Length: 139
Length: 75
Image (cartoon, rainbow over all chains, first blue to last red):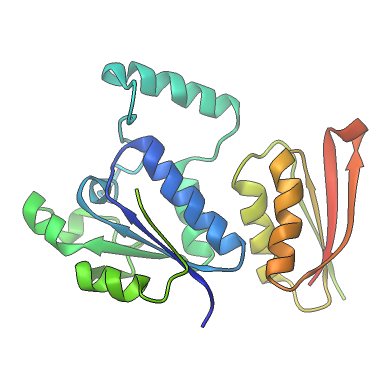
């Protein structure tokens, strides 16, 4: 079996979603397998039209800080989260959606970007996924 | 034996690495991949990724007075 990176994305903050997708893509690009388990606030980013909409984890300042960072990211030619997600999927990355979060937050499957989601699960799915992983991160 | 060129000049982390990986998936064993870029860390990381995946780095050269680089890899 090949090497594997498994990331739990608990945060829905824009900068942390970037971290998860950049690390996931990096792992795939370096020849590893990669999965991202979207849970809690992270799962909100899988709702239709919400991937790019997270606040900044620090200095959000009612969205002003976020806007400034977005401008700087555009200037530095940083890829959008949509692009990073599409690269992640193209390179064979796996997306897992947390079913308990869906229940707590009252989210239905049809509200999510189901075309991205490979598996629906709970903690057992994460453990099984991470059991033979070389890298696992909680973001 | 085919040759594939990818131009990631002006692109930043993780795009050069990701585009290189996409190219390596699309080529066949023996094919040559040429990556042109400007992102400094990728100049080190594309050869690192190549080695990790058992690809052969044939050449790394600086261009435009060090502002650009070009890496040649054989799959």
